[in-house]
Image (cartoon, rainbow, N blue to C red; front, side, top):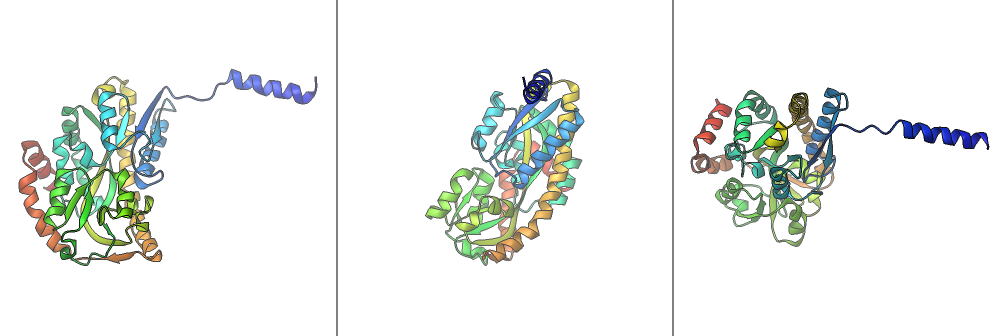
Length: 320
């Protein structure tokens, strides 16, 4: 028998004797954004932090791009216990955690750091709302400041008159764009590129990161900087599943989620201007409409949409 064969046998024996590392707890997390988009980067950070905090005993496995379903399916899977963790738009989670509807309100926070400061200061209050609805809130990521992507440039609120604008399947978003004079058209995120390409809709609201990550500039070459919504992306899991975990894993999940959220929100801020510069280089028409008419049109929504005591209490806590 040759020395090479003996060496190969020794290596094989060593591999059998020392199996590959496997965490004791692997949490599957799903979302609908593109891989390496800002939300996904936050989850990658959370994975690193969780592994560090547990010495490798716990990790997360990330499924981006709607691999495990659209946002409605992802949330339902968490509720049923067939998926460990979901990261969705706040607009989807607020269908279940009704107090979180506050975060869907237009022009609520002037910047992402301002939003993060209020979220961190009121996290326990938000956690109580999530728990009541059967969820555990692990962190609140940012999906950026939302603008408008359209086939034709938007120079003012009047230009939106009658335009078919895709919104999320959320009543506040629908009513907001109706107030702006548009024809709001709710549809799932996965359908948006095709809808823009075929002219089913004339435009959509969205953040610069999504505009870039999903290549919407190919089918909606105008981008209006309105900043109508400072959008959050909560990371959540089923409360019963969380409660069943050992205390040290619970603590590590909460710490990793909130620390990753803080890191991710700053990461989103850092990406904004470079992305806008890249859009201009690609020939995107960037406009800056006067936002005051949009703000004025949004004011009645605070009366008509925030109707429960919990919503009003959270709004007051976030704005005091």
